[in-house]
Length: 186
Figure (cartoon, rainbow, N blue to C red):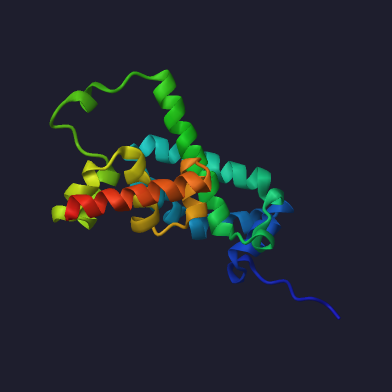
């Protein structure tokens, strides 16, 4: 009995990653076609600099090509898309660290009429009024956790991976952020 091989377009993302691990270029191209638009939008929500987003996208997919064999998948409760986002989030943090280490702040950032970051615009459009004001007054580390968990809909585990924090720290910051929001809105 012969097994019928499905075309890459008919496979789920986890199976595509498994085939990428075997060096299947068509599966890699299909994975990229499916996930890159979503990933770019998600990265732009965190970073307004298109150059950084492009670099992170390139580094992410290069890492996927090289490390697809390390993907554990559903065996550890993960998904291919979650794995991809974890790689991208770590690459974004690395890009921010590189930029902060090697570059001085741009002069436009000090100007009062500088354009707000895409993340701040999305936050303002999503949350306005008293809630938006209270959220913007939170300490940055608390706001990051709340944005990731509430606005982005990430789990504690995904938020921890995104921010490079232990899960316990994420839970503590989420609790502190909610308490501060309650006080601000009372």
